[in-house]
Each structure stands twice: as C-alpha cells, then as structure tokens.
Amino acid sequence: METDSYILVIGGTNMDLGARTLVPLTPRDSLPGMITKTPGGVGRNIAVTLAQLGHRVVMLTAVGDDAEGFELLELGREAGLDLSHARILEGVPTSMYVYLEDNTGEVQWAVCDASASDRIDRQYLAQNADLIRGASAVLLDTNPPADAIAYAAQIAAEAGVPIFVDPISAAKASKVSSILPLVTVIKPNKWEAQVLYGRPILTLANAEEAVISMLGAGVREVYLTLGGKGVVAGAKGERIMHMPGYAEHLVNTSGCGDSFIAAVIHAHLQGAGMKEKVKAGVAASSISMETKSAVNPALTAENLQKRMEII
Ligand SMILES: Nc1ncnc2c1ncn2[C@@H]1O[C@H](COP(=O)(O)OP(=O)(O)OP(=O)(O)O)[C@@H](O)[C@H]1O
Ligand SMILES: [Mg+2]
Image (cartoon, rainbow, N blue to C red; front, side, top):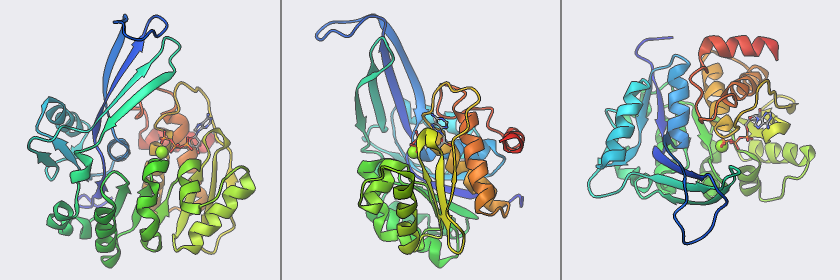
C-alpha cells in the first residue's frame, strides 16, 4: 500500500445512547436499568473498520460543538481516523440515536436526531473537493443531503476515483437513485434494495432480478446482502452469484453490513475480483457478529485473511 494513499469516507458520525430496563416496561415510571453510550454511524463504523484493516482513512463528517461531538472526534482519532477536515458545528447538536430496550433486549422505541448530518452539505464538500479527487476510493453513506451526495459522486467520478455506496436504511436509500450510473460498488440490504429496485424482494430470484436491475442502471458491482441468507452479487460481464451467510459464534448482527462493505473496499483495493470480494464480505461479517458492538476490534487484515481461508 502506498503510504500517502487514503480512503475518503463521507458520512455520518453519531452517538448511540441505549437504555435497557431490568424489569418489564411500564409507562410513566422510573425503572432500574443499564445505560450505555457508544459511538456509531454507518460511515464511522466503515471508516474505523477500514483503519483496522490497515488503511489510511480520512473522514468528511459533521459533529456539534458539544461534549458528544468532542468525544466522538477524540475516539475517532484514537481509532486511527484522520478527522482534521471534520466539520464542527456551532449551536447544532451532535447526531444522536437514543433507544430503549425492554428487559428481554428488544428495542421498544428509538429516536434519531440527525441535524448535524444534514450539514455534511454541498458547500462543505466543495471546500474539500481536492480531498475527494485525491482519494484512492470514496465511500458514501446516505446521511448527507441528496444534493451533497450527488456533488461528491460527480467530483469523484470525474477524477476517476472509485465510488462505494452503503444506502444505510430504506428511508434514506432513494438519495442515491440518481447517482447509480456513477457508482462502482453498492451494498444495499434487502429493504434498501427494495427501494432502489422498486419491487418487493421475497425470494433469491427476486434478489437476482434486483441486482440485474441495478447493473442495468449503471452500477458496476452490486452486493445485495440478505442477513443470514448471505449475499447475491453481480458485476458487469460476470454471472450472478449467491453465497450463504457464515456464522461461527453469533452474538449480535448489527454492523455486519458495515463490515461487509469495508471488506469489499479492502479487497477491491488489492485488485480482487467479485468472487473474492463476496468471500471477504461474508468473512468480515462473520467476525463482526462475534461482539455486541457494531465494530469488532478483532476485524484486522490478518484475521480477515484467516477467516477467508476457512469459509
Ligand atoms: N444471522 C446471520 N447469520 C449469518 N450471517 C449473517 C447473519 N446476519 C448477517 N449476516 C452476514 O452479514 C452480511 C450483512 O448483513 P445484512 O444483510 O444484515 O446487512 P445490513 O442490514 O446492512 O446490516 P447493518 O446495517 O446492521 O450493518 C450478510 O450478507 C451475511 O453475510
Ligand atoms: Mg447496513
């Protein structure tokens, strides 16, 4: 790897604040329980995983000038991210995801304040256009506004920088509909793919049709992940393939998709073909699910390689 090359991640950073009760939920009462605060955001999870895989990672993101914002910047730097270009917003709260789990661990409600991510806007990205042009790869999540995503994709495409997209949720997936012809790799899950495809995905055959439709729209490679059912992948000039999920020790699958696309980027930069990238994604997800947190610190290049050899 060239020492001055870097991957640019453009996307969300947030603080996840979770509460879990020790007793069944009852309204209008103060209940005993546990409260946890963990850094999150799809862009951030992918960025941290890429750093663990040995890459230099620069992130364009936004936080508020509050305690959570400074904590996220500090934790990100400790994780090896270059956050020197991150936007610190005056008077805007850091994006937060607050959720409440009952005593069985089921999420009963969740609230997301993403006002800071709305400020990963076109003007901020324009100020950092040279950083986009100089990257070896750009990863876009769908937290920024749609016009900002389109702007970044245009700049990257004009400079010949490969563009990787994680559509992050069904609600936000349509933000990338218009840039599909510019996209090198997209990794939607089933719900996001349904939005981009415009039809329900009920079977593997439907998933294949969705992949073909996205390739038809101009995406070079599609990795449609289907939770435990694995992934259906397609690339221009290659046969569609399916690989089932692999699990050795399943603790928590949240973040599996983030580690999947991080591993695909890692493999892509090493010159891997589609089959190898599928394997890297499935292997990375199987490591990711072994901890409760979205990013497993054990997901290193060495451990990824070892897991790829056994699946
Ligand atoms: N229950 C499971 N058993 C085995 N593998 C799984 C399971 N859930 C997820 N995976 C693996 O993780 C990959 C990505 O999962 P999924 O389709 O759930 O992504 P996602 O919805 O984007 O996840 P997230 O956004 O929470 O990171 C799958 O392709 C599969 O390889
Ligand atoms: Mg996902």
